[in-house]
Length: 155
Image (cartoon, rainbow, N blue to C red; front, side, top):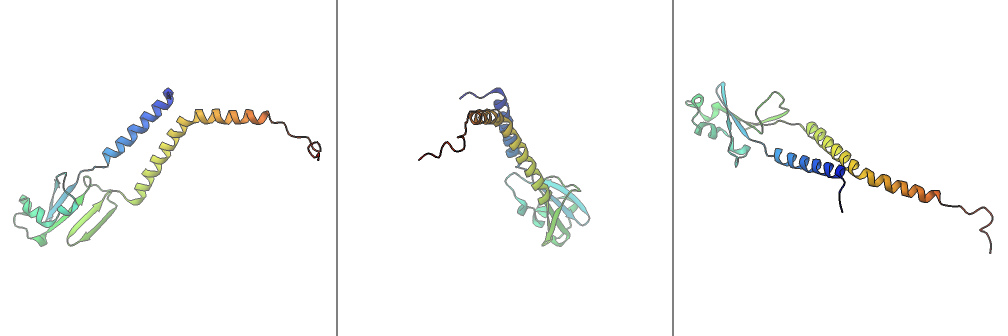
């Protein structure tokens, strides 16, 4: 089956969109170490998770701002992306703040946009076949001749 150039274009665009979203889901992690009133942002290794961003991590990192700090003087914050004022969800637990950049509402808006875009792309690719099918169905209905009333009642 040979795809039309339009269908091939939309299929390629869909494939590109899916691959871009798959690669963008692997975000970098950062640990913000705050000792006393000074803070430093440290990128975490790719194999790390937010649980590795803790008070002991900041002290062991030998930051100049944390030289004389005890564990009680350290607060850590884990970010999936660099910190920004758009933080929408943060909570404190055992002196460690975890922050999520995107709220549920933001995620829903993005998902609805992606599904709507993919749906429109699929419809654009399927539309020529759907139009042909509908036109054939309409032509078949035009050739239909109804039975006149009273003629089909013979016994």
